[in-house]
Amino acid sequence: MIQIDALPAFSDNYIWLLQDTAKRRCAVVDPGDAAPVRQWLRDHPQWTLEDILVTHHHQDHVGGVEALRNETGARVSGPANERIPARDLALAGGRQVTVLGLTFDVFAVPGHTLGHIAFYTAQTPTPVLFSGDTLFAAGCGRLFEGTPEQMHASLERLAALPGNTQVYCAHEYTMSNLRFAQAVEPENTDIAARLAEVTRLRGENRITLPSTIALERLTNPFIRTSETSVKQKVDEREDAALDSPNAVFAALRRWKDRF
Ligand code: ZN
Ligand code: FE
Image (cartoon, rainbow, N blue to C red; front, top):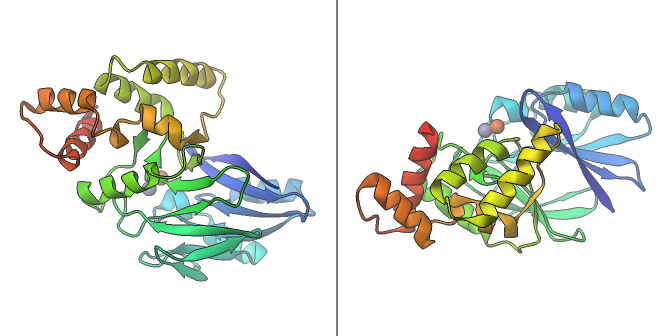
């Protein structure tokens, strides 16, 4: 049994902590800051940090990697096509990596960055996805390096995973993402219900993650580009008839950048 908890970092990052309680070993995903992980290990002196997984090269995801590796000897696995500090294992899409006895599939999901990867396993009771800054709860990452086409394809691939997949993304952006989602689809009752729930959680300073792929399909405009309601709204704003889901996605992402 693997337990997954969030270690908050900076203002809105989550460092995901995977715990194998039976063997008292753990792994972290995207430790942008070493301090929260170091503190957890201090509070749990019997435990060893075995693995550090990295989704992409941005500082808020890799800032703590080198220090943690030096302090613990944990293995660092990250994208093959990016510069990752102290990386031991370079992972390209299609590869697998075994962490705490679980085999994860590595997906190449370019868009936010060109080398961005995601980690997926179905060896847990419900499938688990670490999506980094690609698929967010009700949103997606900005296009810093890739094209809209690349990001859209990456998101569509993640959206095709089993509906019960638990989505662990790297930021607490759910509330602002849902406000945008509601602007895109004012009539969508799933979005309205989720916004109410997330508003309540954030009001109590609670985390809104993990999400699920099923909930994302209902409420995330960036994977709903084929829905008539989304397409019509974007056409209206662009004053044009956008003919492809890719074009709808690109227009949505531009709109969100200024929202
Ligand atoms: Zn990033
Ligand atoms: Fe980030």
